[in-house]
Image (cartoon, rainbow, N blue to C red; front, side, top):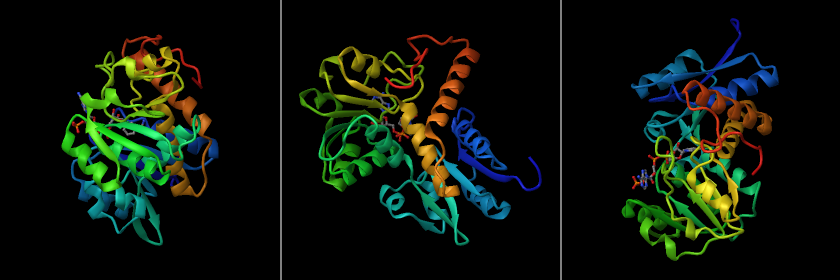
Length: 290
Ligand code: NAP
């Protein structure tokens, strides 16, 4: 680092667990770019956005709980981010701070590595921030989407906005789908023995994506593997959404496979530091493609 080092970062709270520095510092290093990416634990969002302006920070990721509140603090919004109502990426365009959303692109890229989306029947579990971004992406691919959520009203609102169908999590058993996406936090450590769905709903040939990435091999994905489904873990979406962020900031897409490997290594380290050694249950050892 020196006086010419470009600064990037992520704003969230809490943010100490964030894997975004792993994604971006590794990518900057491989590109030979004199840049650094830091994690900022932000309580005063307006002051932090002024900090981006005042310090000339080149680009910023935005995570929970600031993805919605930041909308009104930026100069402009990309069309899709405005429709989704959430920003996960901030960049400079012609002297203005512009908000983007790459979560939906990350999810679609992760899915499209394993299946064709156009016209498919998709069960989407969840109606929170991530589910909302994914639902907007699925709409662009003309998927027929059924949204299920614990809080029915949130599922109803999201489904109505996009012309999709909704239901309560309890009613999901009656549905047949080509693709199933878990965008709830069910299955996330420390509740990693939980799945949002009974195993009997999963069918051979179905594509099952879980966006939870801690652990990587969630109960839902283990069940899916046992039932002969194609499975996609949460690291895929994470790696791709980060790659799209780099493209927005630098006009150049980084090597997604290398990002994926950096993330896997970081997660292995995290498990060994936490005293929870890598094993089949928490998702390790891992193969790059399941
Ligand atoms: P969020 O806005 O807080 O939404 C949480 C969702 O999970 C809501 O639909 C919520 O239902 C549901 N939920 C929480 N606890 C539940 C329970 N016990 N039973 C049933 N449903 C439950 O969070 P988010 O930002 O959408 O994130 C959701 C998950 O996705 C997190 O695990 C996050 O780490 C992960 N994520 C991954 C990526 C990636 O790149 N892989 C990106 C973003 C997020 P209610 O509406 O009923 O509360």
